[in-house]
Amino acid sequence: MGGHSQPVRAVAADVLLAVENGQSLSQCLPPALARLPINERPVLQALCYGTCRWFHRLDGELRGRLKKPLRSPDRIVHHLMLVALFQLRFSQHATYAILNETVEACRALDKPHLTGLVNGVLRAAEREGAPAPANDADRFSHPAWMVEKLRHNWPDDWQRILDANNAQAPMTLRVNALRFTRERYLALLAEAGIQAAPTRYAPCGIQLDQPVPVEHLPWFADGAVSVQDEAAQLCTTLLDLAPGQRVLDACAAPGGKTCAILEACGDLAEVVAIDESAARLPRVQENLDRLDLEATLIQADAADIDQWWDGNAFDRILLDVPCSASGVIRRHPDIKLLRRETDIVPLAGIQLGLLEAMWSILKPGGRLVYATCSVFPQENHRIIQRFRKQQDTAVLVEPEVSWGRDMGAGRQLLPDPNSHDGFFYAVLEKPEA
Picture 1 (cartoon, rainbow, N blue to C red):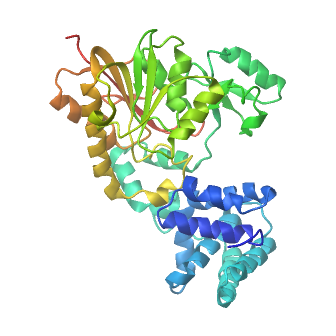
Picture 2: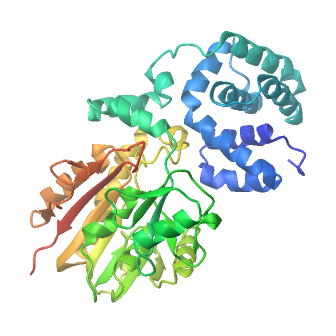
Picture 3: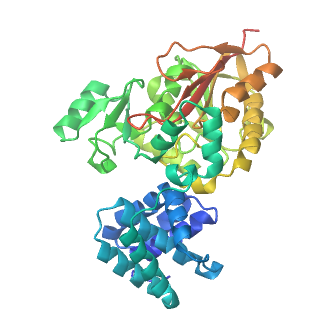
């Protein structure tokens, strides 16, 4: 696709097709944004995120409106119609403009033979309004397996979780405590005309009333604050950091928690940050540089300790494991399209393996914090239960906190539309030798 001639809806359809084929928005959206003039980029972002967020509902409606599915070479036009339906159902955009521009985009995608179909389907959709959802997957706009799993795991909360996943997440900041108190930074925001309030649980957190571009935040480039969800910020409150400790952040990219650890305690002996992804480690370094912090970065699979470990045990380990990310769907709505039910068991195996490996390099008397951004018990308290069956000396510490639910082996935060993401934490200590 050449030049800037491509209409924004055609580019959005292209991005959604890539997501359907297994690419995350964070992989396929940046190159697509680069193909558009700057003023159209926010439009593309809103179309892609919004269509992913409501994909299952929109797709249910569209399939009902098509006599037969489009042939696979024409699949992009299915996505083009989903983008248009998203705008019809969820935006203030003028109907005639949506219809005209979608037909134009269909031509731009070299599918002129389908303009009649597109026009007919969208006119009917506009005339008849949204149909009643056929099932819970359509109603809550999540894959059916996820609705069922949440209903099973959280019989009293599943609908609230699904609704929270469909809400826009707030923008939350972590104040760099080495530079500013939270009160001082709230005052700076007020001077800049940015409405904000302190977070309820995270001691350095500030939640904005409305998201703003980071360059509008006072002293952002100079490391005053970082963007980080409140739930993710809680890791530092559980690590019980003290000067002189050697700390490991075991799955560190993009580095938010590494930086939070360094900000929370100024005199740590060393912070080692490991990540398997060579592509994502530079992000950790960028964050450290902006905040004027130092850590030892290592590209490795944390579980393969022979590959990277120097033999010195750690006083503190943060193990934020790879997971289904089912607690952060509101920030990453493409997870609904990318995640499969069959992913969960292999992920649980990886999580348990990482926990076993990290335990072996934790000092006697040391503390390990296990974290996920998941709401599925299989990845959370059940992993801790499985681990403790193997390691009966591991002491489960019950933190004295007012957040989350006590699961008997760790604490679960469910996504809250007005504050934090879904997250799980468990604190384990290794007895003194």
